[in-house]
Amino acid sequence: MSQGVAAGFTPGWSAGSLASVGFDSAQLYSLIGGPDYLRFLVPFRVLPFGYVGEDSSLWRMRQELSFAFAGMGLTDGEGVPCASLASVVAPVRDCAFAVADGVMPSASGGDDSRSYAMYFGAGGATFCRFAQGQESREVFNLVGAGPSSGWEGAFASCSGLAGVFRLAGRGLYVRCADESQEGMLAGVGSGNVDAARALAAAGGVDPAPLVDLARGIDEERYHMLAVQGVDYRRTRLATISQARDVRVGPQPWVFSFLVPEVGVVMRSVYEANPDPDLSVWDERRTVSSYMDIEFVAGGSLLERLTGVSRDQWGACMQTRTISKE
Image (cartoon, rainbow, N blue to C red; front, side):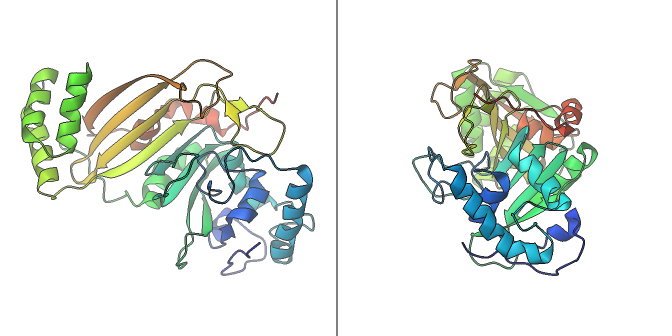
């Protein structure tokens, strides 16, 4: 196991000082007790999908973890994390919902272009990113975001959207009614001005903002950022092993393109199959979907990106009791 990179050692750790500590995927697997839900910290290339390790393997990894961090006061001699580290790991281990830039690669492989992931639940939220100052994408920082009242600001700050995503001067919303309108919206995202006019006519809205958006994308004055949000609140573990990517139950998710210069969010919203025993990796996990576009003039951006309304965040502060088969 490679060693985590620690900077600015501080006796008596806080969530703030922990943000300077780097953890590799093996150490995070040990701390979490398995892969993270979005497979950002413990990617498929490190631990294949379907791997079910033995308890003795996890125990050995925790022993190695203790060798790396016990002297710093981050873990005890058996690899059990200190209170501050445990509070930062908890939302990753038992998250209610999560968000990341880009999209999670398939279990069969593929490049991962993501740069961050943020997990919410189990008493708080944790922002995960590649360690600053590291050339490789092998070491991660975990940044505690505290209670739900600070999640919006923490996400905007840590993701780099603060000061970049500008609210629209006037709100506008169109939900596509059929595949034809979805094709128009896809055309807008490709910089097609005619598609923008057609979508405005179909949605009964002012065409000017949509035309400007399409023209700006076509002329490369505007750029698009991909974000994926996943709601895990109705899923559960389907095994008593530590392979935490083996989950079943409904899992709605949202894939978005942001156009930060003009405050636009273009979404594909996927409704989950209600079957409580269906694997979240099963191709039948989605039963329906729709697309929409919004010029955001106010309200919560994080709510739009995850599909989890802000008035439900408080419930996510509770540590979940996850049933196991």
